[in-house]
Length: 207
Image (tube, rainbow, N blue to C red; front, top):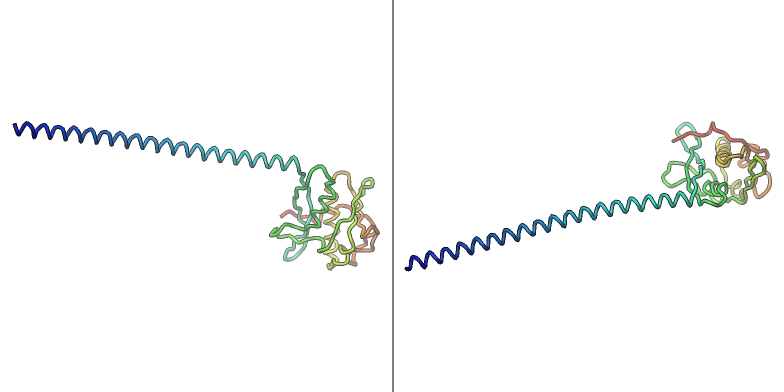
């Protein structure tokens, strides 16, 4: 009789162990499934966020293209044995005077760490620009001339930079440079400024 009771006790304990173990395994299996589902959801969310960022960048780029235009300005590059002009692309607001905006970028100077040198001295200002037929008349303030401390090569590059920037626009073949609304003999004492200039591709290099 005692043996039978002992057998029943062992049987109950065994069944209980099996049930507990089975439930534990079932719970672990359910937990693993939930974790796997959460991980899949996280991956899907990450992809969705990445897609939304890409779409946002694309929309911002499209908006920038619709609200701005690209212009080309020319800055000076100093090499060990020569100086020359390098084109730099700038985006300016669309719908305005693009020629004036391009010359405004020229006055601002090159981007920091671009490796390029400014063309116009500090204090330079664009006073006016107008088109007469195929000629553009560009008027700068006195500081543009008074603070320009360059030799003949430097002066030629400054003039070429202005002229090449302006003649990027269709229909403009010549550029007349004025100082404070008047014709000047030169910018730095070397080159006659009383006559209009034409585009000079020889001074241009690509980086």
